[in-house]
Image 1 (tube, rainbow, N blue to C red):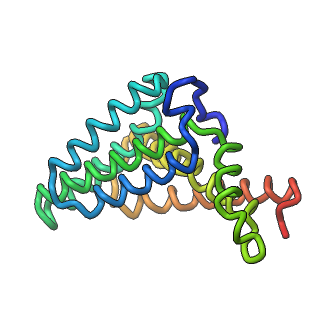
Image 2: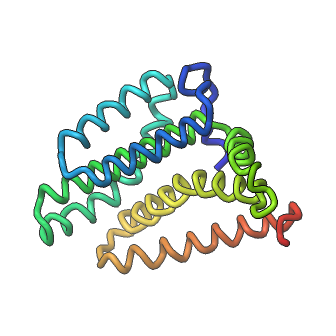
Length: 197
């Protein structure tokens, strides 16, 4: 998970972590509540521009975003049949923009910067909140988004290699099981570092 950071000197790399996180959250909320497809389309164009500005490797960027496309291959037709194709297109656009923004944040921000930013943000509340643990929790959450996407991709690739087809449940079960194994391994690593209390 830590290896997803792509070093660089762009304005996006040098921007304060809290500012990047605030803008990421704001953008996701705005596109999430907007029913206008032009807003989602504009956000998608803006994300592409941000990736160009950040000068992250194209292959690495595609690797972070591609797994969501596999999920959308299943989700969009179902959403289209149940709620209409415009709703399905909006849902797909929102997910793509959100995942792309999360990937951009991950690729331009070190874990250390995330921890330090949250520690600074929560410092006034130190009597009530353990800022170090909250920072670690947020950093792990952000880093685990691509990890879960990779698990979904690997499950779908394994099913394709076996030439099997099945229901959404037959995909969800191995994804959940593998995610739980990954979480267990992560928990053991944290315990080994003395973060079990």
